[in-house]
Image (tube, rainbow, N blue to C red; front, side):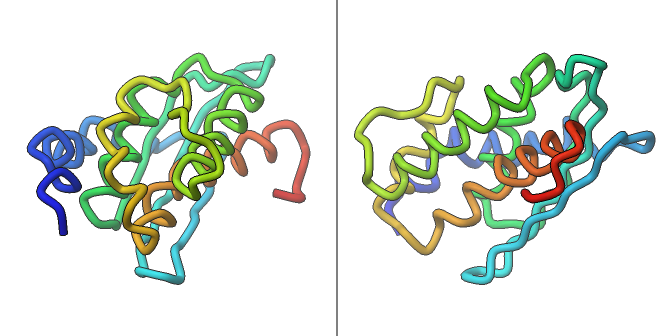
Length: 145
């Protein structure tokens, strides 16, 4: 693996996941698993009446990239709504898949840009975003996600 893939910044971010423990009193909890690598990420959130995240926790049993992606999401999730998270999630998927060249507009995702060259790592780096989209969909009564 490239040293850029597991840079010191990525490893610091992964280690920082402990700053976002799962919420004991969550409104919604969603888990996603990667069949490719076995990573598992569970997000727990509280939302307000407008559907904005008011508290966010995560449990990431994933590689350093999955943990770092989870921490990057968690650091900015409070205040975001479903449309915002869906947009970033889809843009992140598209970036990783090579469908677009621009990184999503989300702080610090550039730290994981080198992961684009390692398709086996993509699912782990998307899990927290996908789980959060599903949780927010449930918050709006949409059970199709």
